[in-house]
Length: 68
Image (tube, rainbow, N blue to C red; front, top):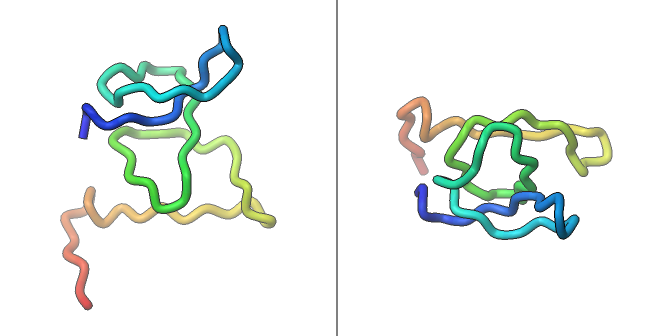
């Protein structure tokens, strides 16, 4: 998971650029898309939902097993 890439804001180019999870540091601004797996704790500062809502599934953290 740490070798996967995430979109991190580059303050020099003013764009979100791919960066490996293992290279992400505290304070980095990231863009997370719907249904994207994340490998770190994040502070959500904006949602593009009309009501500003977001759903975070913690099943992998809690050790739950998805049943069909």
